[in-house]
Image 1 (tube, one colour):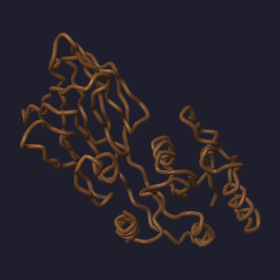
Image 2 (cartoon, one colour):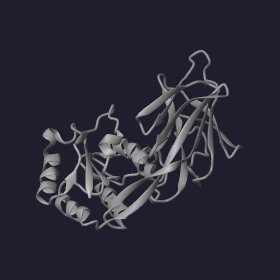
Image 3 (tube, rainbow, N blue to C red):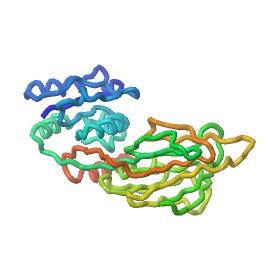
Image 4 (cartoon, rainbow, N blue to C red):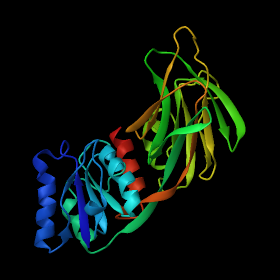
Length: 281
């Protein structure tokens, strides 16, 4: 196998972990491409991925998400070495590094497909923005503290009007992210569904709703709660891409046609990770 190594230089100071991995590969005659450092501006090219069979990512969940969405275009499986805090997406930390590398080069692992979301912003009948999300699309307020008004429709059928701080549309992978902080459910990450969780809704109906992955979710931005103050509404895609919205804008969210393949060292890893995180908290 040949590996592409992507490292967050802010998480791996002086690239110490990266150098350990390269030394291990050298000792075991394993091929790897030039190391790619991952920042917010990083773009992976065809040359980076050329001839590679898998991607090894050193960093936290944010680093892994950045790389995963880009690797989707090259159809490469990905595994994370957690150097961050939560590490729900990563398979292992530094302590289990050598065992993980041995199992990787011996191809002792499973592949797990994770769905992506695609979000399109429509203004005055024209699409003005499009992006993907592995975790979530979050629509919330910016600037002054005030309630946002928005409508949600599913498959062109009106569902509900909300007055809230915002709304999170997440994948099962993203269920342990902002969705969890907002009181949403935890979902097994390989499941195929879309979660809609209002943020601090001014309503008794403030529960999450789970939809089929093939459903089409439309969020329509309403008029400001206070016309004199106006409103600032921002749509974030995995916390990286974002766009400021206007009253009357619509965001149409669907399951993306592609997927991300995560390398899993065993089939109960998510439950083990969840159990550990619950104990820690």
